[in-house]
Length: 378
Image (cartoon, rainbow, N blue to C red; front, side, top):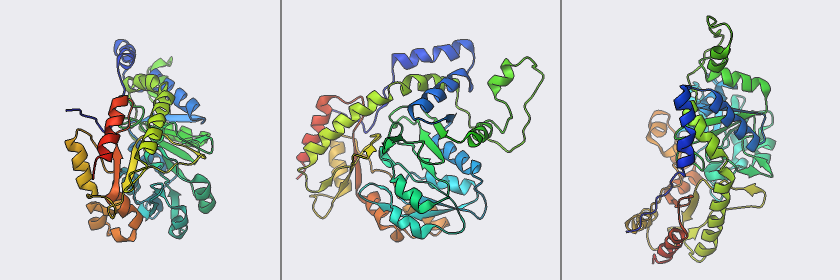
């Protein structure tokens, strides 16, 4: 039986060959390949600085640390997002303040954002979920001088009004997990146009060292160790990952363009299914298409969302909920006392969203098969 995965990374001979240099030279930790990857990523996203780290989670953590988020502070975050977007606020000893989403876009609802801002609000984390940028102009208008940290984990290559993700706020954060459009296995990237923040982030990811490992090892005085004038973290990306990233980032636009073509195919072919809402799009947004996330209207559909997902699984088509409502997770309901009913948009998205396969290893026949099976559900 045909088996279509929800997502598959596109890696092969080029990535394999790219790892040879760090393996042969012995430079395996953060070094020249990470630096090259950072430069290419910064150029593609039109930002001054890109700083590679171990994941989007550690990127988000460092972003908040760099902005001085700590005990007694509040950080506003969407209720519907991957759990790490909220967890990093707790890492800093601050309080996550949840804001509901606009179900149409799955992103934070700017109009509800107003009521969440207090004198304790230290930062806002708009999430560009599934590759669609948040409405950053409206968010900036409401936020005023409050710093914005873009959670662009899904949004490499995406743009809002011709400005690439990562340059829309004070700091951007990206993921290279295998479900993302480009991957280094695990890995993340911070972006910023602020020179001081960039320097601070570079030190923070490397234990707080005043100079990098590469600078130290290539320097003329081998007895000198770096000074440590801040509490830092070991969040460095390896050069093996950086080498893969150099190859992958060069393919990003091809990957996105191909996914966009098939997203349009889905849009057209699935329009006749009255119980299935396809992803919202607008000419002001360049979608990154990390995922193609639909919404099932159970008042019209012949089966529940979960039953439809089981039908598709039995036909060899993998699906997933879009993501989860953090406000429905037991840690946040039991330990922090969040009431899920306060976030109806997130609850709808949690219970009724369904991502269908969209990735660069799928064939024409795979896409046609997904459509055929969905149309056959009655």
